[in-house]
Image (cartoon, rainbow, N blue to C red; front, side, top):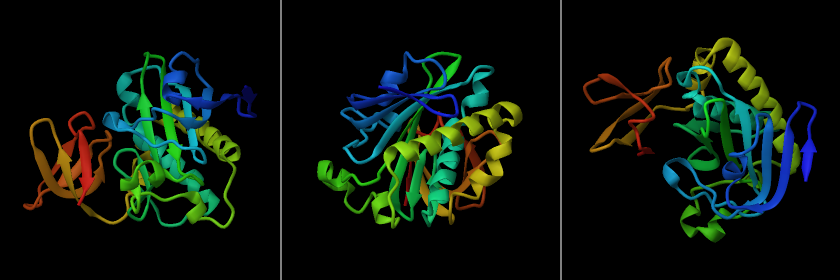
Length: 243
């Protein structure tokens, strides 16, 4: 079933899919896929993402032409966009975790995966825990994740939450085209929460230090024990773990 929205999106509603990102691969811009469950949901670096019924599992195709460098910070900007939608719902204690997780304290509420299948568009996949039980599928997630049901007195329906995200995503894309990534940097840096000790897994070694946010190009800033700050690109950093 395809459901049109007021903002010009066409939402393909499906019951089950391997990955909403994969289904979006062949779709044009301003199309989205909303699934009840995914059987092979994935995150950054190929990690599996538990996508059981009761969550919001959606991917969106947005225009992303022009210099590829313009869109490299898209996971950061989309995280900030999603944070804004969740704050409007009344969720408290939200923060971002570099580069693409939305957290409540130390528990993960939502995650993102941005993929490019061509030079003209970008596919933004997201998952939000609403009433589902990810720990039933993966017991190691017990105490590591949270749900909107645990955070709000009234839980939104996935369809209404999806519509709010689609509106916010369109506004974000328009702002990226008109003003560029630098228009978002200050607000993104205000959303990380308190300074945290991290370990960054690079190609052949691990570096530890204090996470200091991002620079104007979207690079991760980390301060070592000597007080020296270095900038690391998302390509360099395979995984960042908070200690």
